[in-house]
Length: 140
Image (cartoon, rainbow, N blue to C red; front, top):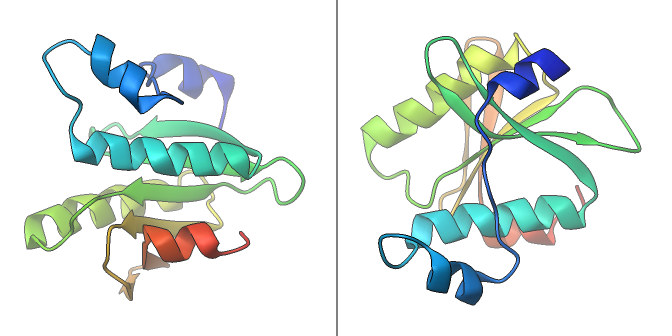
């Protein structure tokens, strides 16, 4: 992703210590969905990925656009969604991946969830939906 695109996005902040983040957060406790996204971020960092995010012109957001520093320069796209049981939620998450996949010349598109697992074929991409525990145990 170009530096120009990266600079136009607002900054997302992730915490290593959730108890500290919860203590200093404005407006009370940080919800479980935010903690879930943070957990995935920390795992991507552990895997030594270069991490950013992307927002389309239509305001669809990709949670994590990653590149493995050692291998392929084509990015992997990750959406993190605690629960995709709602058809509206699933549509929102897949639509963002569809809109971004070709534009970013991505290698893969994945939605990480709490417990769902399946493959979805859309237009020119296959979207892998995988539970977080299984994704974290994989070697990618």
